[in-house]
Length: 170
Image (cartoon, rainbow, N blue to C red; front, top):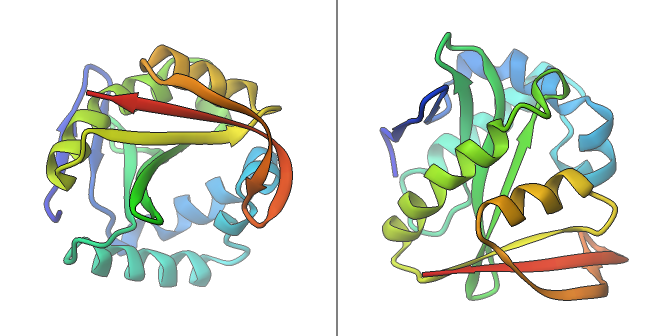
């Protein structure tokens, strides 16, 4: 899934290139990332470069993960959207840098990304899973027509947490 370009009113979702390493590194250090997705924190710019290199290679296969930067129309990298395999299914994820939250960017990106990635993957449903204390993600999933199918204790990134599992179906 190379050469992806999805344009929305305010955003562009595209493929990573190595020049984005500094913004990926800096965005990953935010408190929300540390709390909700600690395995996506890059303590150094080199760690971000190594991950971007891996992600660029993953565009060449059908197994994923498929992670794409979200850019403002000015070219500024403000976050990412992704589809990752979970067992025999797929889960969507996203993050918007703190400076840009509460502006609807995550919902805008996800609404355009979901139909594209589901078509490319040949799937008719995709999961959205978050901790129940991640109020922003719960709001985004609701705005994007995901339906809550489970709320309770569950595995989240290798630990038991109160989680919410949402499903989007076509």
